[in-house]
Amino acid sequence: MAVATTMAVMGGLGLAKGAFDTISASKREKERQAELDAYQRQELTNTYKNMQISTIGSNAMREESSRNIATAMNTIGNAGTRAIIGATPKLVAEQNNVNRNVQKELDDQVIRRNYAIAQDDANIRGMQEQREYNDLAGLGNAIDVARQDKNMGINTMFNAIGSVASTIPGTTAKKTAQSFGSGFIPESTIGWKPNYNYQF
Image (tube, rainbow, N blue to C red; front, side, top):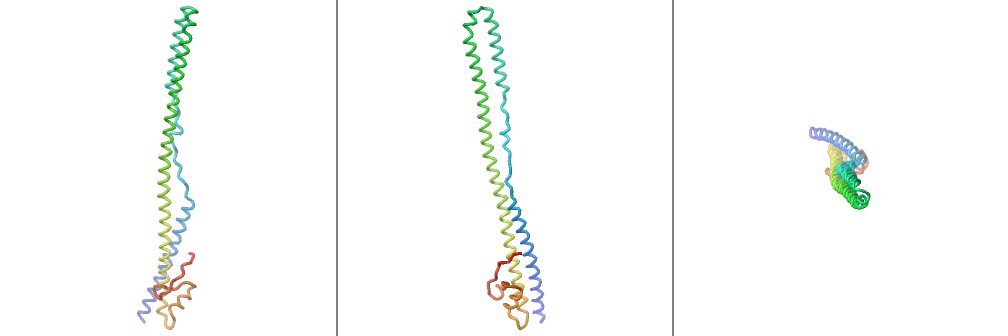
């Protein structure tokens, strides 16, 4: 009689532990699933997209060219109309050359900035993918662990019910287990496969 009482007590404790583990794991699973469903992609900013093109160098080139042309025009002006007419094409060509150099300087800056933007975009994409992979993998693993713990809790309850049932005189383990509800059949105790389709 003492053995039966001990087994009944142990079975009751096992049932309580199984119920606690099942409910706790089910709660963790729902929380992690909610985090997974609400997961938002990380937003990283490409700092190069807001980088301004510097006009300091080009402005200095234009100012220097304007001073040179003004000086040349003053000098040529003192030499008369013929000198002005003869020097004008050369001054215009020099001004055009300065403008081309200014434009090249600005274009080179744009090209360098675009290259930096493309490089940073690639780096950001890689960082986002790695961080999101780690986050989602962690949440997925937490959900799997919670499900496993929930199943273990259910098995613990099944086994506890079977242990308690085996101590009741004149009652088979199967009938006693079934009295707790359809599907509660202790596999490890009586060899039948339990039904795991329960929602907690």
